[in-house]
Length: 264
Image (tube, rainbow, N blue to C red; front, side, top):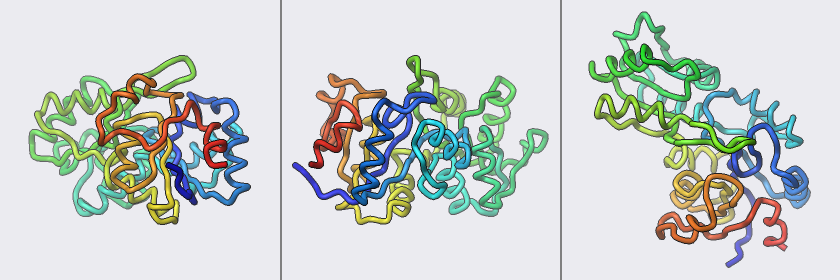
C-alpha cells in the first residue's frame, strides 16, 4: 500500500553506500527526491567518525548533505548520556566521533589513569581496543559503573564484503561482566526520536530506508514510520521473506533507486 511520504530517514552503509562508494544511481535518486521537495536525513549506527567527517565522506561520494542532515550513534549516545548522567564521570572507549560528541555535551571524561573513578562506561567502536582496555571497562562496571553502548551491530557492509562493527567489542564487555548495556543507537527509541526531530515531519508522513531488519526496520516500527528494506546490504531476500511480523518491512526494494518508480 502506498503512502504519502514527505521525509525519509536513510541509513548510510548498505543503503546509500558501500564503504566509501555510493551505490550506483543513488546520487541521482537523492537529487530527484530533493527536486520533489522530499526531506531526508542520514542516520548511521557508525560512531567512529564525526559529523563533519561524514559530511565530507558523503560529498566525496557525490551525495551533498549539510551537518544538520546527518545523525550518528555517537551523537545519540552522547545526548542520552547527558540526559541520564550529566553529573557523572565518564570512561569512554571509542574513536574521534564518540569522543567529540561526548565533549560537545560538556561531560566529564576520564583518562585511562583515572578509570577507577568511572561512574559510567560508554562504548563505541575503538580501533585500538585491546585486552588492557577490556580490563579497564570491566573493572569499572564490576565496581558499579553504568554501561552504555552506541550500538550492537555485529558487522558493517564494505566495498568488498563486511567488517566487524561495534557489537563484538560491546559483547566482550557484556559477556565478561554479565551486564547488558543500555544501547542508544538504532533501533532504540532515542534514535527514532532524534531522527524524527531532524526530519521535521509527522511520523505518518515519514519513512525509514535501510538494509537491516533488527536496526533500521525495528527503529522505524518503533517510531511509527513507513519502513523500507533495501537488499543492497546486510539482509537477503530470503531473510526478509521469513522475518517475524514485528520486523516485516512495509516495502522491500532491490535498491534505493527503485524508490522513485514506487512513488510515481
